[in-house]
Amino acid sequence: MASGRQAADLLSMVESGALTLCYFSASYLAERVPAVALLDLPLLLNDRAQAYAVLDGPLGLYLADQLAEVSGFRLLGWWDSDDSAP
Image (cartoon, rainbow, N blue to C red; front, side, top):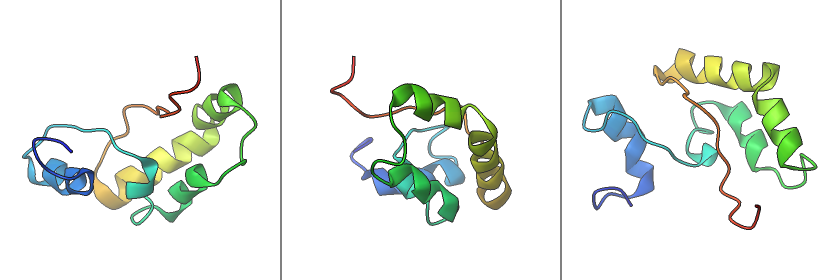
């Protein structure tokens, strides 16, 4: 939760100007950009290096462009939430 708000509220808070920026799981963006749901598929990528290579390449650029086109959001970067990795 951010400022007592649920993560699902972050998108609308940024759109309204209540927040300048935020970070959240890709799954929150899939409703706006269905292709983002690819990032939630298990075993799609072999390892973290491959994931970063894909997201730093044409697919990542495509997803960022689609997000900007449908929402006005600008992607600043990708991150992963795997706490078990070094």
